Image 1 (tube, rainbow, N blue to C red):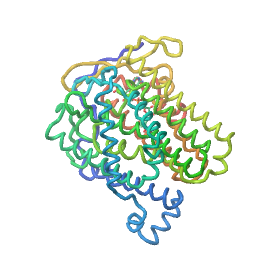
Image 2: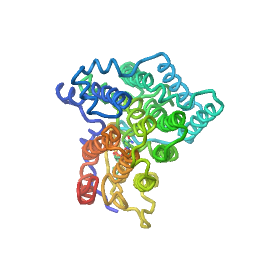
Image 3: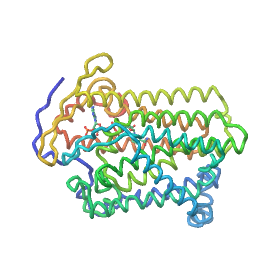
Image 4: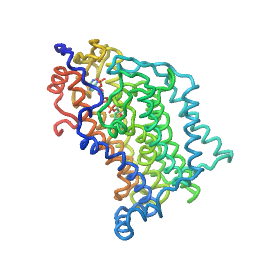
Length: 451
Ligand code: NDP
């Protein structure tokens, strides 16, 4: 075990970046506020109206113009879609509020708060799916409701994904939960995009960010997959192995998330990212529409020869499973060393770590452990590598070279590479010498020997 020298108090600059940017760079950085909804709408149109072909879509846009295509084929906002999304949020809010769960502490915030979270996601996930299967079985709901009403659901989710950060923005000014944990960049648009409050709450316990990410975003993912399975069965009279395997991989990923929910409290989403458009729209709209493209595609179109080949599907499924196991094992090692204060074994040996001191804005000196053995001694973000293997395998199960099918994996590559860079900038400011020492001991960011 090595210990580094304490940092001066000037290191209290960690948390979300972005403060002090010029208005121009704030606008550039916030471009996803405009571009992200367009991406979700475009993908919907490509999938539903152009057989998943971007080139056919662009040819039509060149001929008729983007807005004509959007109006003709784009998502339609209907009362049915609005009621469905509002009902979904209300039911999940009730489960979040009233289901029992063990209470866990999050990480220290930049202002030195340590919040408590009641973790009942697994119960909520099981109940939500049991009710869906039960009501479908007894004929009270159409199990293929989601793909059948996808247009109005996407429209309503886009509206909700814009409303939520708007309300959070106003709340941050009028009624902040922890005023000392707010971060203002000096640009309204950037603050709307990346959020002002770190952990906005309604009352003492209703954590808006945790609910949005963990209970709205993750929960709907597997429901969309199952609904596409049902839709395929309704249309063809059977279900394809490719769609069963896509659903199985994603069920493993989502169930794992809820089984290990306390681990989520130490991730960037909950511990470091503020609640704005990026997280709100991302979990409300981007995740349900883009992470499920494989199920949407397979539910709607005939399988390709590759997707009908059990040998190909079996190999890809095993690679996806290996990605998931890597992801879980890396995340478990970090969680264990932080929870047990380093008193744990990694790969059969006592954990090796650096003690990294830092200062919160209340002036308190604190310290975290940076694991330098196990996966964390090979690469600083091996968990991202596991996630990438998993997401590329999910897409490969569709067996198509169409770009739209790969959007999820391409997105994961962009978001995780960007995360490596922005997280390390923050950690360098937070831990100073200790972070430099860690980077010397573990020089690779993602793939040992490559980057
Ligand atoms: P991590 O879980 O790796 O958390 C990063 C944080 O861990 C750092 O900010 C730092 O926090 C701490 N840390 C860094 N190095 C060490 C170390 N050596 N030892 C101990 N702690 C360390 O990253 P994410 O939150 O981004 O991702 C969590 C998981 O979620 C990943 O597996 C990722 O693949 C997945 N993910 C999935 C997404 C999806 O859309 N499906 C999107 C994003 C992530 P501190 O300040 O506390 O030191």
